[in-house]
Amino acid sequence: MPILHKVATVQFEPTMFEKERNIAGLIALATEAAEAGARLIVTPEMGTTGYCWFDRAEVAPFVETIPGATTARFEAIAQAHDCYIVIGMPEIEPSNGLYYNAAVLIGPDGVIGKHRKTHPYIAEPKWSAPGDLGHQVFETPIGRIALLICMDIHFIETARIVALKGADVICHVSNWLAERTPAPYWISRAFENGCYLIESNRWGLERTVQFSGGSCVIGPDGSIAAIIDAGDGIAYATIDLELARDHDVLGRKVLEQRRPEFYKELPTTTYAWNPLDFFGLYGHRPLPPGRKSRVAVAQFAPSDDVGDNLARIEAMVVAARHDRDADLIVFPERSITGLGHGLAESVSGPAVERLLSIAARENIYIVAGMAERAGGRIHNAAVLAGPEGLIGSYRQIHLTSEDHGWATPGEDWRVFDTRLGRLGLLIGHDAMFPEAARILSLRGCDLIACPAAMRERFYAGHPGSAIRQSYPIPTGADPSHWHHFRVRAGENNVFFAFANIADELNGFPGRSGVFGPDTFEFPRREANAGPGTSLVCADIDTSNLDSRYPTNVVRRKDMMAMRLPHHYLDLV
Image (tube, rainbow, N blue to C red; front, side, top):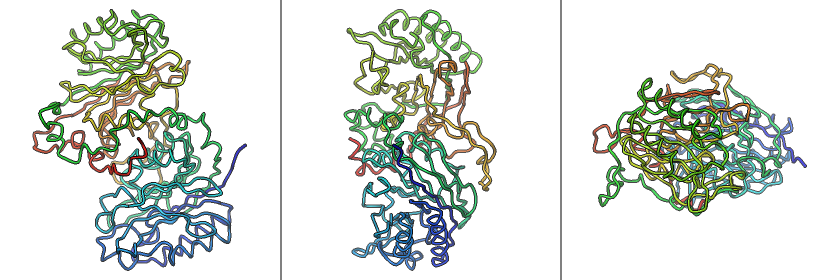
């Protein structure tokens, strides 16, 4: 049976130094939402005070305890209307005088719980200590609710932890900027964890910082249930807790299919040191020099004829090499042997031998998928062939429920050093697990190649934004605004080459692409394929730029350096 609740996301522009005005404005909006029947009302990060504070001294007159005078005023609304309200505010801890960027969940009986922002943006260290409460889920009569604040959600670990703790709804309060909204990160966190995400974002200009707006409610399938694009206001949606708990929702299936025994590297900090020093320690597997290269992805529908598949692969390799000057081409999952497993063969068999001859003749790297027969077992595998021969292969670790009927899962991640840089392999369903790409990034990968056979919707368009954005962030309609594997690339600071089967009659949408290592770089460094058989190519750069410390983001990996692994133990 459905368990339905009306929810509201509040969009608001606070004004610095005018705390009482801000609180009065938020109270008016929260009251309006409560009177309209909303049971859960979410307001923006630092909504009571504004955000861009210079230092502790400047924000000091505006910090408060939780509970305190401000939470009491919202508690009165919650009591009067039997609802729950999330407020973003600067908090003081009276025991030691530290300040925190906090969010508080208030119900009819008072404060239920709070979250202190764990992963600071560049602005917080000017005045705030990093959060010390971890990532909690609060039981309420309207569901299990988690709180995250702005940059927390950049990190795959935070939303994953609260999903594993049973969150039905993530209330994400933010002061988001530097891209159009609803932000692809927000959509991916709901989609990959199978829970609702209520996004309350501020808008407006503050101390030269342009905030994005775009507050919304996102469903467990990544769909946008409600949105307010520009200005102060409220967006309403009805959520169904049963949908967030439905084991047929893709994100919930993924939670059940996790392989924590392979995730032991998640609580490590491989980028706390200069990566050139760290990976070169003891002379063991230093990062390869890297270089500027061109990477292609090819999509088509493989048949049940290995010879035919190899002929198509060869033709696309020749086109990629001679027409696009590609150095690497990635083909879909089981592109060699077809989607069945009856034609499985050994990695040392004739099909791979032919692939090796093509790679050697064309002086190119090739990644292609196959059903691999080995020692009486069959694996869903991918091979990496290069001019120097067979570089290696990888066996899929995360199998779909369908593939469990025939395939044996792999037993290790595979990372290879090539002339293009450090390359990791994933196969299709693996990439739905944020832990998988994270581990390859922690191992120093510059590039992840992902042959895929995915039917699920993992992309969505955007109709266009009314709110002003800073050039060159686009505001017009965009058919590929959210692509889940663009998010994978950016959150791990890797190039991600995703090659999906294109066969719309059988539910495979194509939508392959090569995605760059910086989500907030515009125009983006990427190449996108639509539906149908096609080949696209993008430039990549994995070099160290001749510096003692890498300035290239794919080598520097800011998102890895800013992780806080002591919070991530629940993942393993």
